Image (cartoon, rainbow, N blue to C red; front, side):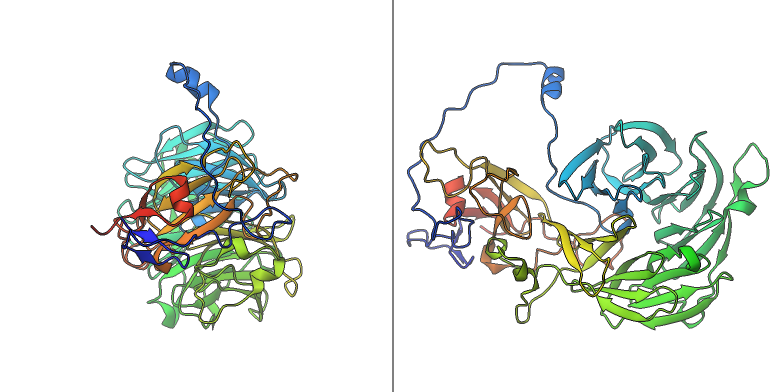
Length: 515
């Protein structure tokens, strides 16, 4: 059984007295240091009477999801009318209101994990794609949280989905082994146009006038024209008409993000490659200009009418003018990997830069045109929402830091009869393959005596086992991501079990990956 000291280093000398890891755990306001560990005075748990499954389901409701499984921008979307942000969490769609810090949830009744989603332009619906065999494309009513349509046209998983701006069509792109690209008349539940794509497609985007959409992927930028494909009145599915973008000397690149221009840039299409190139195509599909982002890797982009945001490695998001590709600024970086969130009590702590620090890669972006907010998902499964109204004075609106890998155990912190608890009432602990133990509390009451940190409204403290940050970035193979996402994660690594909540507080937990 391994033990963790105050610095987070693993120790196997169980007989040695262990220092506490409580330095940095949030204290009560006005309290200079944490109180001594009190004797446990547990309250007796009330045994629930036997009830039917239906009764239990009616009694239990999901309050909050602490996690995210969005692996790229296909798993993140924004309602252009309200600014609500939706993202994937297993088989659940989480709809976040950042202003109120409140979540709503849509459950995939098929119990399959979700792979992609997108809001409709009016914000009334969300379309989702699934992983696994015979995946469905489903339409959900956002207000009622129920399914309004189910469309079956893929065999091996759905990589991307999107509504057309005029809401007449939905496009769904399968994974590489599926190869199917479908255009749906979703109100009639029929495929109106279809084609096969032999290469891996990573992202797609609709033109502002709904006349075409663009897919990008491995050595692939292709324009698909809906007016030509769907104007003929036929009863069967017609071939989808596509034309390749003229890449010139850039034809060997892997393109991982695409966004059709808005407003005065509606005739342009912007793409970003893994190698760190931002490209602009004109209305004739010709590569008009491109610039080097000067990063080791880029992964995503999104646009507003005036700006282009490019997500890159090491927490970098570069901002450019849409009409000229002129570089303007960088977003502030998020937390560095291994940060002690409990120490971040002042806003200035976010901009504290540690020497030789490593920052999580940016993997997904979406833009809120109402509030001028940019939502960013990072590779350590953290989310930040930035106010970019003034790109020279960017501020953080909301953020949350989740586990980046499997959660193996959850322990509830005991309730104490006296007032000497080290954590607020209702706290709980989780341990994960990302080699961390995390302390959480969902109490959002402004009357709480416990001071919140600037990174999260729910996360109180992170203990990094062995000071290990290599498992903090999600390096696992996602469906259809090939080898670009790194090597598979060792699922035996990390913390598997906590002896009890007091043990975790004082640095004792069981680790996987060893005897």
